[in-house]
Every structure is written in structure tokens, then in C-alpha cells.
Length: 250
Image (tube, rainbow, N blue to C red; front, side, top):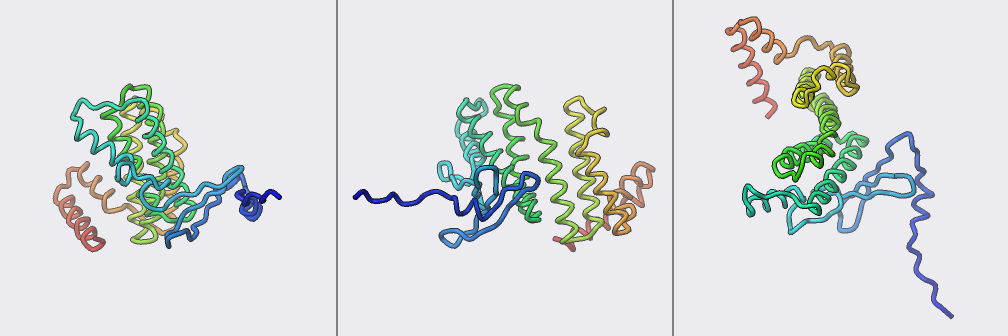
């Protein structure tokens, strides 16, 4: 009599965790070796992601990420190094993996970890500008930079609200809005900045923080106003106050 094959399906897992297309369903669970992994419920399955380094656990040539691997390769090959087709595909794959983990961290309100993964992709995209084989490939993922900046700004503001102060949260939003404005200007789309949905949502977040926590002008906003009005003595005092605050939070 033939031996029955060992069951390998995940039917029992899928039945116990319903998929809801209207929300991001994420959980942090214990895994082998004492580590934790993220799981995201998706249509027809589950994504499992490592919480450290690359989400898929791959360490290319012993490096923590493909980004790190390419940096080392560029140093070895010199300034003339340019990505080939396979390397482009691997770079895009890593960017997508860090995106999935970023939205997992946001769903779990792990804002510092979401910031870390957003910063990874932003730094990776900056690096890819230098070694891209062509503008078409570069634009294929550079178009998502505002979305990454949006997530980074949200996470930074909410982390500051939890760990520091509402004023610092407002300043995080202002910093993100400035980075978005620079992106629009670099791409000759400054006229679209005010009407952009992500810009409007960040401004709404900032004003909600101001209203709910009674935040007036922040120190950095007062500094910008003082410089614009050529009140340099006041500007120096505000710089000192900002430096003292930063030293206290360090």
C-alpha cells in the first residue's frame, strides 16, 4: 500500500486568518531559532518577512542587503561601473521587499522600524541614480520616491509624537514636505506640488497636530521667519534653543 504523502499545504493557516481586501492584515510571530518574523495576509496566501536586514533573509555574498553588495561592487569596479539587466532586476526586487516590510511596520505602528526601511529605499534610490544603465529604468522606480517620502514623513512624525513632543512631530512633517517640494522642483513639476494628494494629507496631519496639541509656530519655523525678517540676533538665540533641545534628546 502506497504511503500517503506528508501534508504540505497551508489550508489550516488560511482558514484561520481571513483575507480582507480593505485593510492591511499583519502580525508578528515567533519563528525557528528564537527569531520573530512578520506575516502579511494577501489574496490567496501569506507573505513572511524577516525583521532584520533583507526581508527574504538572503545575504548576497555575505552582505546585509543587495544595496550593500552593490556599493562594494562599485568600489571594486570603479566609477565606470553600470548595472546590467540582472542587477537591475535584483535592485527592483529589494526595493519591493523593503516596501512590503515598511507597510507592515506602519500597520503595526512600529514607526522607527518603518523609518529605517524607508531610509533604506531612499538611500538605495539615491545610489542607483549614479549607476543606472538608462533613464527609462531609473524613472521606473524613481516615480515612487514621493510615496516613500510620504511614508517616511508619516512615520517620523508619529514616532516623534510618541517619543518626543508634538512640536517635534510638526517639524518632522515640515521636513518631509520640504523634501517632497524639492522632488517636484527637480522634476519640473513645482506647479503640481500644492495639488498633490500626499502633500495635502501631510498638511492635514500637521494642522491636526497643531490643533489637537495646541502647537503654535515651532522653533524652526520661528527661525525661518527671523532670518526672512533679517532679525539675526533673534535667529542666533533660536539656533541656540534648537541646539539645546537636540542635545537633550540625543
